[in-house]
Image (cartoon, rainbow, N blue to C red; front, side, top):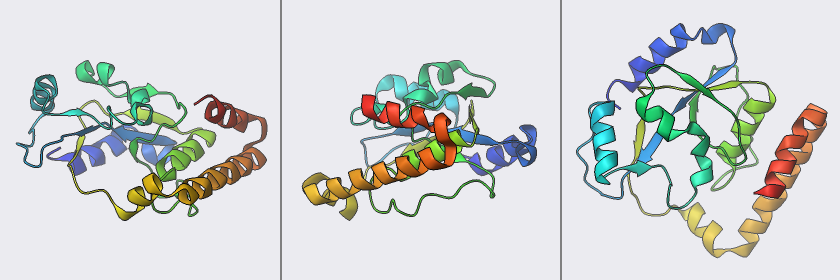
Length: 188
């Protein structure tokens, strides 16, 4: 989005992020085209979405990652709105500098954003979707890491082990409250 940086700076002040635990969600979209007339406004983005030039991010591969953003609500939203954590939620967020860091176990492809958002939720951050913010993912060749994830069973086994280790750590740190993360994983 043109002006996203300034919009985020204003949102930080308006939402008193210095004194609250909020994660500002920037709705993500994508195009399958290598050339795109980048939308200059939300209205232009919605038009391109309706024409099939843009799509909600990973709608055809991994809808769970951004589903809680509630794109239907975002289309008409004029004020920020809160969304709840759900299993596999991995939005693009802006948080304070003193927020939890990404877990260093998750490098390459897989679970880095999911684990980070889970940690934010466990620490009772509010996920607030910004009504006039958006980002657009452009197509590119698959990364080395996603290629390994797709083709190498050992990579997937290691990632599964890291996920289980992360969830056990969450359980130790947050006790009963972390149960929802383990239950959600088993149901997804």
